[in-house]
Length: 213
Image 1 (tube, rainbow, N blue to C red):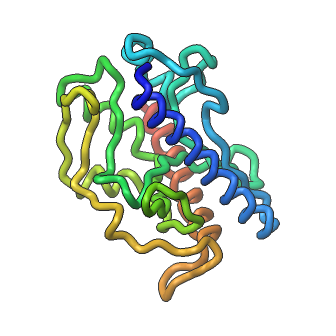
Image 2 (tube, helix red, strand yellow):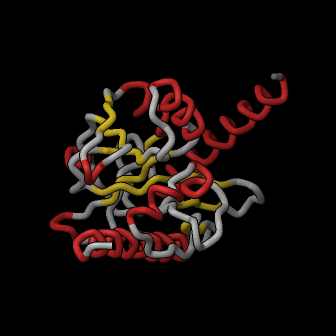
Image 3 (cartoon, rainbow, N blue to C red):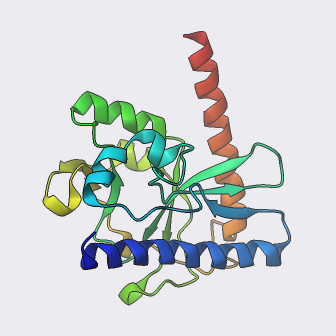
């Protein structure tokens, strides 16, 4: 792995760990029994050839061993057994919102099928001005809303191969401290509870549809 590529990967991992630390401190202060963790706690530093080989749906969003895991996604667990919020973390200084596709997902039909498996996800945007993670956030955004309403395209450039880029500007969003509510929304924990309720409802619907088929 080249030095620049490795530095970017390490910073991405450290930034997510900082977000997790900040949010778990907030959850502990609220005493509500919530916690956030990375789906894949440990990640191996991979060469480019390994990243292409192991870039599968299972290694990104499912259970995978340390040697092949590639996911930087997170889950938030509530105090009730089985209730989780699947989460993409993205940042205010990202140029756009993106989804990294598995290597074998190429055709438009395959892209749509892959997005369908992610519709229960939410996106939490974190303020990161000048590359410094801050303890301020947007409300969790349902990924299905972005997929359904925001134009996107597949990029094939060397640094962003197999990446969907959405015309969605994170820097234009409203960021608040986790305990700060707005006129129409409560603090972040309340927003997470509502998002978790909606995600688990969607999971139950999908499960019933799967059994019916």
